[in-house]
Image 1 (cartoon, rainbow, N blue to C red):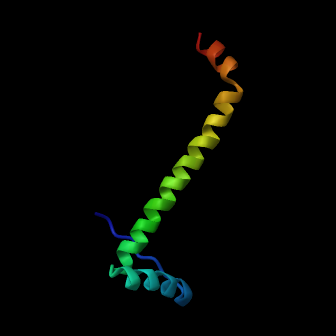
Image 2: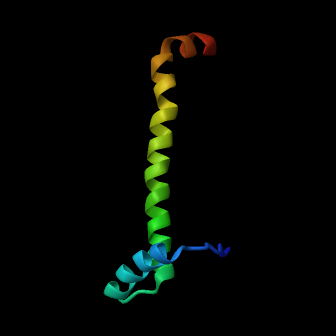
Length: 66
């Protein structure tokens, strides 16, 4: 596994430490879960944006493929 070091301002670090303490988990695990959730959300958004032109131009794309 690759490591990534992120500088966090004190407010963001407290915002990370609070749920980690409440859940009895290391802050690194909470941060990793947050990154995974964000990337899932972004992936869904990017896919939706990419599919829009394909839907809008489906007939043209079909004709170009013939």
